[in-house]
Length: 277
Image (cartoon, rainbow, N blue to C red; front, side, top):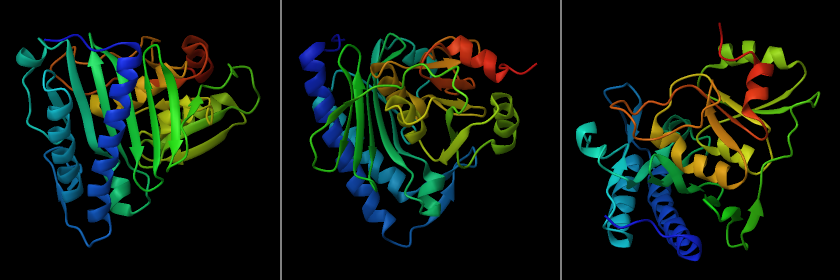
């Protein structure tokens, strides 16, 4: 299987995948503007035609862009670990991250496409169809944000504000509010911004938040693309023991609880009193 590209070639690939994410976003918005039906998957999470339409666009596009790498999608077929553990390089996608927010019509949902290599997020693209906003980044190439047709601009995490009296915290709109509130009390005075989807990780990537503690279940396709953006912007996505998240290392696709941060993860975890006793 071919090795992933580097440097300028990886940047060019990222741009091509960004266009594909926008195409998937168009398919999502076509459904968003209708009276769509909502069904439940086996794990009781919601599913709409928008999820499936975006999956079809992305899966077909990636087969055309880089047919040598397999695709693992939230809305695709299950791939047994015995098979996928042989993969060094593959695409990991969430065609519509934040389906609950899609159903609520908050606009806080994204298209997530990541390229994983040797268990790490090498490149990631996050597209917000409603905001018409792209976040993207890759190893060695930095991270960008692009709004609509404007020129992209470089982004990076905030300076290490671990000692600030008023840290900025991104939090989930739909999950784990009570436990998060208890943990954040250990910070003292802080500002909490709640929103859906992988936009929370992107807030840290662009310096709009210092930390995002995720104290609840997520899957690998939820985080991989934005994880790549955070890393390219100089930040970290670690478990509650300070170890960077890794991908495709086990049968389960569930992530551990994690922290997204600028600066030293160990210091933030101590300040938050994590992991809990």
